[in-house]
Length: 113
Length: 114
Image (cartoon, rainbow over all chains, first blue to last red; front, side, top):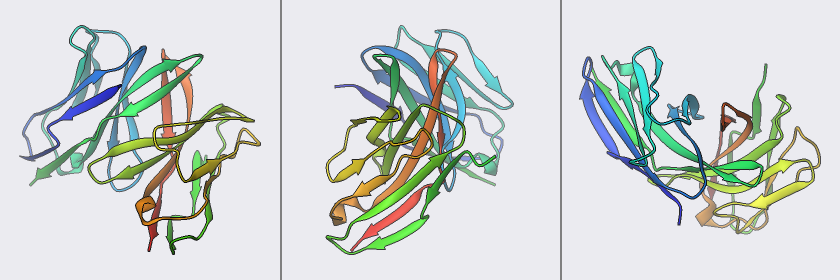
C-alpha cells in the first residue's frame, strides 16, 4: 500500500531557530513530491520536486528530494511566528495520464516568540 | 480571480440528512478532487475527476457521490449523513506542470453531523 510518512508530527521552537521537517514515501509510479503550508484554512502550495538532489528555495524556506532514499526535507531558517502552521507533504503518483496525490499526516510547527 | 470556490463554509446536519457541497473553479483545470481532513489523519481523497463526465473513487468514497457535468463544477453529495462524516472538506483543482500535478484548494467546509 502506498504511504507517505512525515516526522515529527509536531514541533515547538523559538523564533530564530532553524527547523527541518521530514517526509518519506513508499509509492508506485512516483511522479513528484509537493510541500504545502496550512494555516487556518486551505493548504497553500510551497514547492514541487521532481528531480533528485535539486534544491528549491523561496526566501527562508528550502526543500530537497532524495529519490534514492525515498525522502524529502523542508528546511526553515530564522523561524518567525508567522511560520506556525501545519506543513503537509504529498506525493503525486502517476495513474494513466493523470497523477493522484497521497498526503502525509502533516507536521504541526509552533514558533514561540 | 476567484480560483476554487467552495460553499457552504460551515454546515450542521442531523444523522440521515442529505446535502450537497458545492465546488467551482474558474481556472479551466481538467482535474478536480475532494478531500476530507480529520485530526491526525492528514488529507484523504474521496473522489476525483479527470474531466467533464469522468469521475472515479479515491481512498474513502463510501457515503459520498459526485458528478462532473461541466469543467467548472464538481459537487459532492452526502447521501445519508453519519457522525463519522464530521470533518473538514476541501475541494481542489489542479493542472500538470513541471512533471507534477499542482493543486489549488478551496477554503474548506466544516461539516458537523449530529
